[in-house]
Image 1: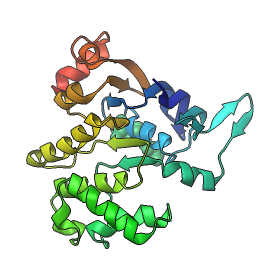
Image 2: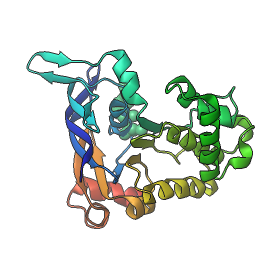
Image 3: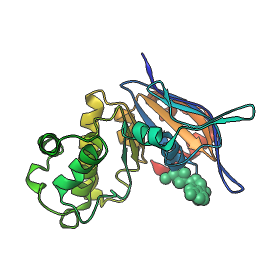
Length: 253
Ligand code: ADP
Ligand code: MG
């Protein structure tokens, strides 16, 4: 199976705070990787480096064979030109905890924005495909409403449709249900579950352990800027080898 994301020895600091202390991770094409770990362990930063929202200080990240991260080899620091960064980023969908929809645009306009502005798709094609995506996330009837008129669960489903509009090779989810009222979590997990079932390559940061067990091919447990343990859910969730993983799971389960 081919490798979609290849992360090698990635380090990232903010000032004197070492947030990623040497991350090595491979995500195979078509697989779902769930990342768990306590608050502050570096999960969001890791996702953000993969999507070029943060620059790494050392190490390399490639997505679908294209180097998108920075790499220091000896004293040499390779950087992609900004144009290339933007191009690479259009291949990666990102779904945030707090939806990040454009408040002044309708649902439909939110979904077509990137295809039209970044990918230069003709508007009528983008609209057709946005309507299909809204159908897929169960929001066909909300195309002309504004985000503030929607529940959190609906907004997050729009955000997922918007991410899919780029036809991404990779989808990143950063705690997609953490900001939702409990009764709205299920409808968002249903959409993510469907995507997983269709073979979408995804990295999902979540505290929903039961969901992780269900959809993950690989569970990664992070703590303090490092990957403590990784493997199939049956191992990491049900028979963790490391004390820190056990301690974390006993708190969130
Ligand atoms: P997690 O998502 O696992 O909760 P984060 O990746 O958000 O962890 O954060 C890891 C650490 O890095 C935290 O201590 C956080 O305060 C710090 N951090 C994250 N982003 C920044 C930033 N832009 N500037 C300074 N510190 C940051
Ligand atoms: Mg986070």
